[in-house]
Length: 337
Ligand code: EPU
Image (cartoon, rainbow, N blue to C red; front, side, top):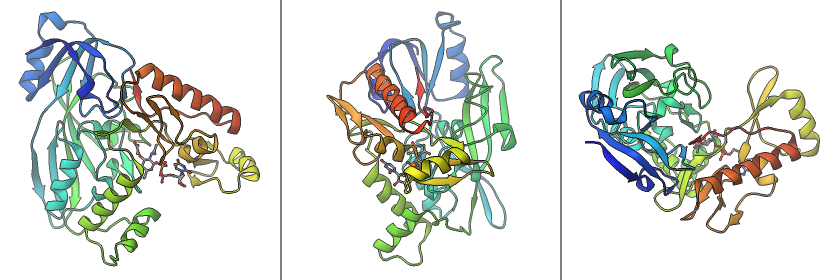
């Protein structure tokens, strides 16, 4: 059940060629318990893997990699206009989105084609095109590693923020998410306010979009901007969009009149990290077999054979040049190991 010295290249979307000392797959909760009780892995560091799509592996992992392959998507409860759908955490996120579209249930269509698994989605409150997972989240079940107990977390327990949750903060490495239940609507109100979606629908001549039309528009936009990890190694946005003081933004705006910004609160605005990185001259930059994507400067890419430390160093260089040009500190979104 537990394998030794397993190459992780196929298990991380950056395609990093590193080895895990121990590796096991689980398809049931009983299997998690059995694996965690094996004497050979006692006290070893653990890495729970879903799709491996938000991870930069910079070295071999001297511990146990646990690959979540819990499967199954089932509607569990329905009322006048809501259907609660429970998905096992090991399901591929986009397959879950396709299930909702097949069943004409609204709520996650804007999150089409995001790489990764259902279980990883709440960890960082995945988001795109004006929607975040927290908007349709109902509850999740998680396995407590220390006790083997299954606990249920509701919306408030998860403390969702921008690409944040309690599972990235105080509960980091303490739970394995095993299922997520979403509250989906039978009468979808489409969220097409995000400019690019409307433009894409217009381009396709669609004036009365369905959920499927919105999903297809999102797929078209993502495919045109973001590299497919099956072809070019990457982890989506490498950095978060930074939140800065309004006063600092006003100062920057005097020099950079076209700088994009999004309101946060009375004192803060969010800036577009991709724009800052592009302005600092990094967009499309290639350093041998790795670099910055040509269509979206927020995405670092491995064309094949780059090491995690090379990508990390590149992110460090980008951080420093954005800092010195704009006095803005970027924060990485991707987990570094
Ligand atoms: N921009 C540039 N140059 C670039 C990239 C972006 O000037 O190279 C500008 C755009 O023109 C636009 C602004 O920056 O004015 C924002 O760009 P975009 O709409 O592409 O979105 P983003 O803020 O760069 C975020 C998410 C993405 C998500 C998109 C769409 C983060 C860190 N990233 O990117 O999420 O798909 O919005 O909603 O919030 C991910 O998290 O992995 C991810 C891909």
